[in-house]
Length: 152
Image 1 (spheres, rainbow, N blue to C red):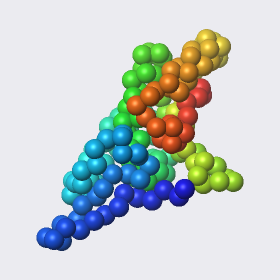
Image 2 (image 1 turned 120 degrees about the vertical axis):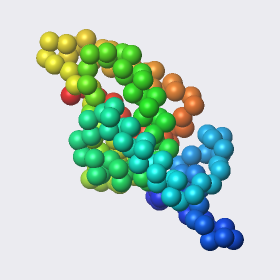
Image 3 (image 1 turned 135 degrees about the horizontal axis):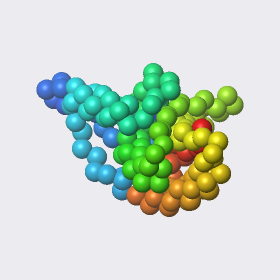
């Protein structure tokens, strides 16, 4: 399934509206259209928050990817909270990673900055954190597959 940006609709007054991202199912949240301008203001605000919480390695590519999957903001925020609880003294980066064989496998990778002295313990902790991430029930698997977490 190829993802596309949110659909733009017009009402009788020719004001533009944006509908929910296509990657979400109806049970995820209520689908209420918002104005085109408000959508992009909200998107940019959320993207700026993301850049305050993570070091963005390739911000332009990350921006474009999240624009196609803007439902990622809530998921990334949830991941950030979990990572901050588990890795209190570490910094986090996000990189957009391209799969050379299949663009449907492109994803964001959150890297936890680690050092040689704590790598083994961080690796064990990351295994536990990834298990918790897989059990996040409020996010569909189609969304979860767009992000992975690793040590750097």
